[in-house]
Image 1 (spheres, helix red, strand yellow):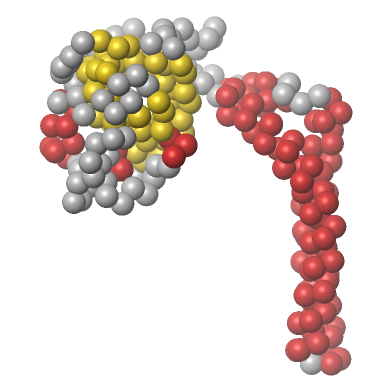
Image 2 (image 1 turned 90 degrees about the vertical axis):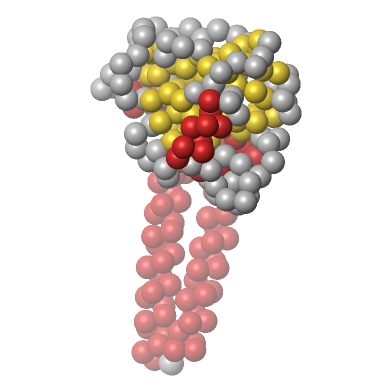
Length: 250
């Protein structure tokens, strides 16, 4: 039993999950060829109807139970997916067996038991106008009150520091150029930026550590757009495609 959360981007309005061990083809697969691969269980295709980024949550051999207040529609038919290599890849379908993948990375891979899987797809239908506010409130709990105060203070200091450094460099360069020429003006600007950078680096390390913790909690607080529930089963099992737009079973 395992659970994965992946940010899947697509430029062809199509995301999915497939066996990362499948050999690359000479060119990317799309259209009818992609549908045929899906029907054979080589890839599970989800038509998103729009380009963009989608949060995929993948449950392997464990059930999916929506959190209180969340509403998901379940696509009626379970679909087959063969993950014979034991490594799956989730993301934009433009990278399915593509010899030059561009939108997926090693972070989009997940390890499973080599097998056929029955996949059930759940699509988020939650309408919560306060979702963003709730997510930030949840992320704030990942930091102590002292850390949260320091995080906000460091963020403001860094933004203000960069602005001051840029304006100072511009002022130094303008004044020195006027008095001594462009060469000395450029050197003066470089010295000013270097001094500002040294000060900012001292604050940056602490800020980055706090920001990473806050951002991870913020990402986890947002409900997934798509949930894939994978359960091992004897195969072969017919696969197919799913559309995010359209009637679904609840």
